[in-house]
Length: 166
Image (cartoon, rainbow, N blue to C red; front, side, top):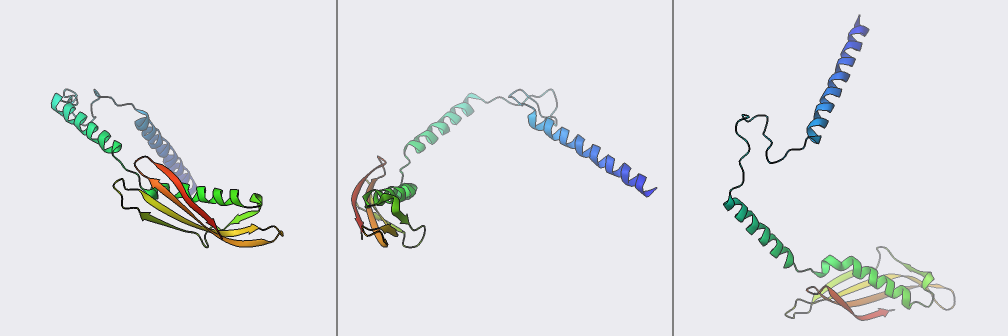
């Protein structure tokens, strides 16, 4: 008798779960538009339309957002990963055996950003990298390198100041 009740209860939960999933899926795939009416509202009162003042205010908000997006200035922090990659590639290209350069992932790596105190907000980026590279005798020797770049955030341009490998 208990196994029959267990089976009935199990099938009841399976059917109820299936019906609830079907109703959720139906609700998620239903396309509502401007003229659709909420099921809780009376059918005689459709959703109110936007008045011209609301439309004008919405367009003013959209224009303000577009202007703010245009005026965004980028900082050196937004591009720091690209400068690390540029430095790593420069070090590898300057090595005697470029295929035998092993950069450290964490140890000896550093970055600093300095303000150049000019009217444009230009910055200088110093990146230090460490690792091992092969010398002319075939031995892996440790190295430390520093790369200096100037970054102009308004133009999003950069220039190499110096690259030193010790």
